[in-house]
Each structure stands twice: as C-alpha cells, then as structure tokens.
Image (cartoon, rainbow, N blue to C red):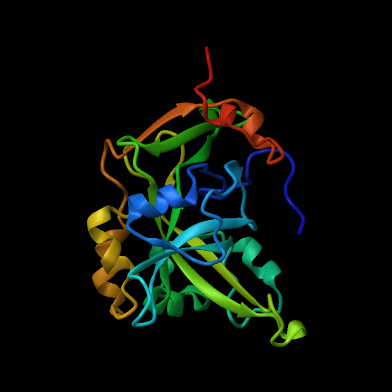
Length: 251
C-alpha cells in the first residue's frame, strides 16, 4: 500500500496522529480489555498516517464479552459494498453534518460506532494572509494529559478474492470531524470530535440506534480541552517517526 512521503496532508482534517502510549496502559486508563490482535506493549508511533493500523475502542458485542474492547482497525473506512479497500483512502474523516446523508456512513452511524484513541494529533496552518509558503504544523493533545477519544465509525469488509481464509475480513474506521472549537480555530476550520469519558458508553452503545440522540455529542470541544504548540516541519514526511516530532519548536 503506497504511503505519502512528503508534505502536509492536502486538505485532510486530522490526517496524522500520535499513538505512543502502550496499549496495555491505554486499556487500564479507559477501563477496556485488549483484543487478541493487540500487542500489550505495542510499537510507539509518533507520526501515524491514514491506511495504517490505529487503536479503536468498541463495545463488546457478545454477552460474555467485556464492556469495552480495544482493537486494531485500518484508518480509512472501507464500506461493506466496496470493490476493493482503496476506497477507504478517501474516507479517513467523516463530516458530522452529513453522517445520515452518505451511504458509506449512515448504517455505521446507527450501528457501528467506535472511539479512535490517540495521544495527540497534528494540524497544519495556512501561511498568513493567504500566502503561498509552506503550511505550519502544530501538535494538539488533551490539556489534562488524558488520552484523546475521537468519535469514530467502523466497518467490516470481506475480500471476495480470499474466500474464508485468514485475513479475508478487514476492520476499518473513520474519524468524525466537526467545526473547529476555540482551541483549534486559529489553525484549522475543522477538528476531530472529542468524546468525553461520561459519554463513552452512549457513543459505543450498539443498542442506541436513534442517531438524533447522539447529535449533541458531535459538537466542537469547549475552550481549554486541548493544548497545542508549533512543531518542526519534519512531521510533514511520514518516514520521520520519533518523540522529537511532538516537541515544541524552539524560536
């Protein structure tokens, strides 16, 4: 699968995330259990792009399953009706305003919601006064130090060429976005929907199919939710991946 090599994501909102905390620690913080496919120690990713694996939390769907499960999903939602998984490359984000209007998201919004977990994310600010220079990268994280939980949707796609062999089923997800809140509006006009702890169970509840009841959760986060700082343009290249990427750029 081809990966972008340089430059900030074209106009994608939330097109790179930082996920460096070990999954075992995230599971404890989020009161979840790890799926069998998740390495408890994980591999730190400080510059994780779309089309790769992210951690997302879902509700246990069997009676004997734990209430919350952290599993691996391909970032970029692949609808069940897609002919091949490349469709997901264009579905890394889903606009909150049109979830019920788009075939790719309508059913998942009603039945398959998840929380995409991250330590932080990057956004790129356009040059002042509409300049044509390079965009300026910023790193965002929760001001209280807790993990970020982005509203997400997920799907299972079956590869018809692989019948029932192992790996024939692909789990994928998308991150829901909304208008930028006060912590982010100076950098970008959109932001990922951040779900607070007290709303986790409502968002994940597979029995809650009345999507109108979920609409209040799809709002911009209030001031003070996020902290941010400018970072080096080294983050523009997805081949760069290390803790130095989230460090504040020194003037």
